[in-house]
Amino acid sequence: QVQLVESGGGLVQAGDSLRLSCTASARTFSDYTMGWFRQAPGKDREFVAIIISNTEKTYYADFVKGRSTISRDNTKNTVSLQMDSLKPEDTAVYYCAARRGSGVNVSPAWYMYWGQGTQVTVSS
Image (tube, rainbow, N blue to C red; front, side, top):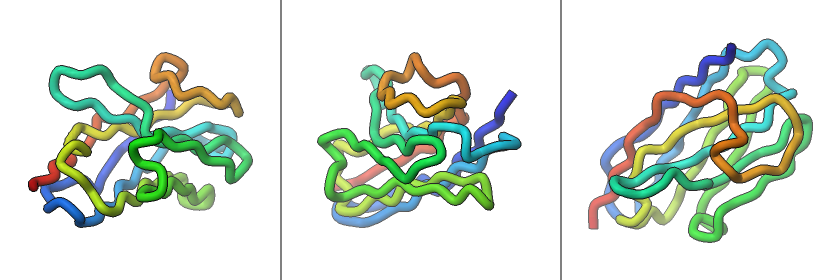
């Protein structure tokens, strides 16, 4: 069982930046593909960014490409999402997700472990 704990959400204004972090309890964190997803009220959970296990390969949703960066620190068991130029439509609960393996998969259903989520609210 892997536990994920997110932090870093909050209330910001349009154009501001936020850095979300997620700490995992996994013994071999580097073996896990890590992802960030978000869910706005009344909408399905959607892919934001993923970083593949044992590589530095990253993938982004089109709506954050160019203004967000996902990164990981395998020595600290953390994955982070730096979000810049935030927009009101970025308002959502952001979730960290994990699954052991190196699949390139942006479907929430593929991920086995989830954090509790952190709220990001962007005011106009």
